[in-house]
Image (tube, rainbow, N blue to C red; front, side, top):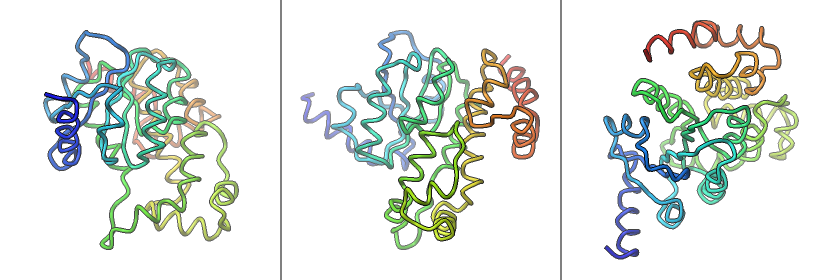
Length: 257
């Protein structure tokens, strides 16, 4: 099959990504060994392999992409930034082989929606899809919600790139050139949740992903996801998730055995 025909074929598949259960898998770590997460993903979705060099030229802008990287220093993050710059609506999940302290921040700064381990089981993948659904912006009847999102996109970008830092509503409003009061109402109208709820949800989703690994201390995870006080992190986590971070990790560990 010629390159042009291949691109056209992949574009047809991409156009039906969400309708037909297709997801895109991009391997940026040059490992031939099968990835457990990818094999588990095939139980529920049709997985289309695309080369990192072909991805941008074949995209339509509304894909769900699983980007496989080795670690936080992977060149795959350059591709992630390029995709998000050109196609902000595309959703990207980073699949890592080596978890380190910089991984979560690099994913958020580059614009990724979620992070999972390369050894993720089917339950963990289901939970990932649930989190992605919470990040989705529901389309209204007039189909103009995405254009409205553009008005708060500077704030969303700041949140993604500084999730571990203090985030002040006034600064986010200024980035969008709105008053704090108007920005607060607009954000709630577009996203369906308050700014505080959105930030907490983003931080907790990321924390849940990192807690599945027992290689990082809970205090370290709290700090890297924007909770500078581990006690406050534990209280917020239990309020929204229903258990403590330690209990969550233990349950996931027991389920994986």
